Amino acid sequence: MTTIADQLSLAQQRIAQSARNSDRHPDQITLLAVSKTKPAPLLQQAFEAGQRHFGENYLQEALEKQQQLAELPIIWHFIGPIQSNKTRPIAQHFDWVHSVDRLKIAQRLSEQRPASLPPLNLCIQVNVSHEASKSGVAADELMSLAEQIHDLPNLTLRGVMAIPMASSDPAHQRQQFSQVKKLFNELKSRFGGIDTLSMGMSGDLDAAIEQGSTMVRLGTAIFGARK
Ligand SMILES: *Cc1c(COP(=O)(O)O)cnc(C)c1O
Image 1: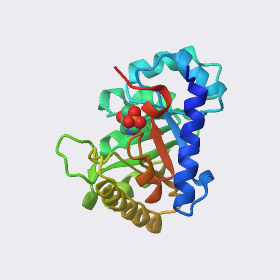
Image 2: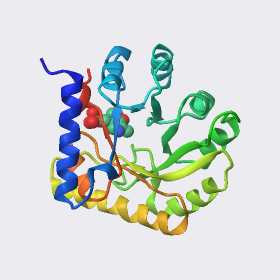
Image 3: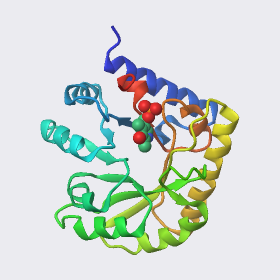
Image 4: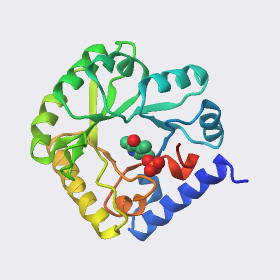
């Protein structure tokens, strides 16, 4: 039987191989374990195998697992769509948010971030595939949103996140990721402290790393298929 530890180790090897293929150092890429729909004991197994960063999409589910795993120094990332009436628990219980695409959400997160906690790390989600169904700010609106978010007090703007259109064609994957990379570079040249390019999932990890990803978000590759 393959264990979570085996799957994690394979994922790390795949990241390292992709990094080397692109003349990058594996240390430049953080693995975010996407644990949505998976029960707390599986997260614990991943933690025991050395995993520290976990990503969740559904607030209620995430809060329950956080309670169950309260003893573990996990770094929690919120990566799902954010409704404005859900910002308070996100501001209170997460270390990172990847899926901000509106000023109103960022303002609420900043206002609601407890003073006892460090600033909330934030990535702006960008939509480069022009899919109307998808969250994310359009490329030409990124800079003005970033400027406004950068001025908010209890947040640290770290970079951009993208979920490109699903494609099994590596050329198409690369083309979309390179657009995100360009936006990341523009952000970096405008503001200090920008260091996170959150892109790449189980099916397009290699193309994402080749195009400069610094954080890959893997669910299926670590925990198996979701129902
Ligand atoms: C579910 C999800 C992932 C992980 O997807 P896999 O294909 O299972 O690796 C990554 N990022 C986001 C935003 C997700 O919602």
